[in-house]
Image (cartoon, rainbow over all chains, first blue to last red; front, side):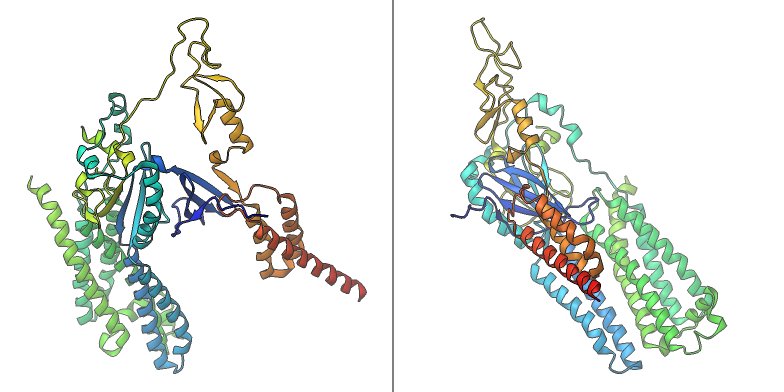
Length: 341
Length: 196
């Protein structure tokens, strides 16, 4: 018996659609007269069809997702490697245990780099615009478009320079009145919280530099509210910049500031455990059974007597100033016309 | 053309929503959006430049001898429904898969699953059966309950519509075989326990 020919051919790429679904996967399939977007959620599949004759445009936008993933993986690898180095000093041979997670994350990093830069894709018809989550890498998106091209040409013909020069068709008056409700609104952001966040980040960097040189409970104690205020301001700034007209550079540095908050949160706990581990009396001591005593222990830690503590200080000061100063300058430049007006 | 009108027609920057100028259509590489600076690349096709046309509302019947639409007696019949034969005006004529259908037949076809192009969702019983048959193997005592359930799903939904994109019964077959093996294993265990 002759095999029934496949109705759909799978296109490269796989992505997840944002929403409440815990697990979903979207893929694109080539049909004879339409493009099918299949969204798989657990035990059901949902379908959306885009007929070739109706597809007006496909727009790609470069994103930093791949770079962020690479950066996070790199930081994780560095963090585990640093931890492995310190544990190895205390327990020789322990690096073997750490080699497995390090190897796993290195493989993930290589896979992410090989996949290439990331993007987001949108498909446009006369009546709506649809996100295509499966086209989340530039290389994949271009491959898909190359495969789609013959079908679109067969259904619509080729785009000529004359068409582009002639411009878009006139909009009927009846349609113009309904346009306002569908127009995407972009709000003007004054970047006050961005300015506050980056100012506090620079202050934090300088304060930690002071803490590095001065062994004082008060100095260590005051770094906590500064860090907390900076984190809150960063989170508010991140929320406010969504859907705003802020430049990409300023948005990027805000994300970097958020990443710095996350990194220091993790490093501070690692530092605490390293210090507790090195101080053989600490766990038995009554002095370590409350937060105040732990803070005292923290503040008395001399960076020069412990390499790990020294590196945490150096990383914190360096990153705070590297992210804070450019971010502060960008925020000031953005706000300058508004304050001068 | 107003900005809002242009936004209806022109591809927009996915980040800031501002319409892209024609100079940014079909560029060989990414270019910066003039408003937000995002790097975008827009591929446009002839459908974008197609003139907008109003839908047809159907012509009025001018004399008593003309055939009229079943749903709009005042409007002239333009075509007959390919499914039920009713006369339809231009407004009621719904063209799908090169066939002309009336709204009732379209709705009926959608509900009964006869018009594949209108199906928006399918339940994947084959995946369900495979997961129920396979996953509990991690905690094997649960297979006493899940194996019969998996076999029931295989038998009950064997003829149910499969995935539109991967219409293969392989998962059903694997789930069925797994379930049968598990049930046989449990029967053997019970026999051995009784024998002891």
